[in-house]
Amino acid sequence: MEEYIEEFIKGNKKAFDRVYEKYAPSMFGICMRYSNCRDDAQEILQETFIKVYENSGKANPELPLGPWIKTITIRTAINILKRQRKLILKDDESFFEAPAETDTEKKSEGKQLELLKLLNNMPAGYRTIFNLFVLDNLTHKEIAEYLDISEGTSKSQLTRARDWIKHNLEKKRTDERA
Image (tube, rainbow, N blue to C red):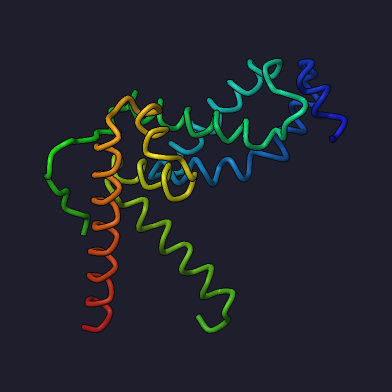
């Protein structure tokens, strides 16, 4: 275990700075998945690390720090979306209308950016469930507890998110052929 983590848990400010430097870039990526703009992602990141600092004494020195910070990041993102009223989950069957390289590595990076752009255009409810289930590996039961919804709502939102992605990818392919 790295020495600064023990100091961080004791509340040492310089150790917190090292934790921030190490984990902020990857946590920002998570923040971007839950928001649709950099400003919102920055807000989530800032609030996350305020909570990390305030709760540093609760971190378990026997466990890796990254997953603990990731959990705080996800919960913070969800709370901010709820507070901003951007996270609206419906239990009905309505469907939201979607807004309308040469090097292998560049192509892969381009596809990742394209997927991130697609996810950012996804309605917030769909995006949140998709992120929690597919990218953060939570179960529908865990998602239901996080969001205070039924497991059925979580499952139906995931199905709609997948349908939304499929519809928009097909639309993009059709537009590219035209």
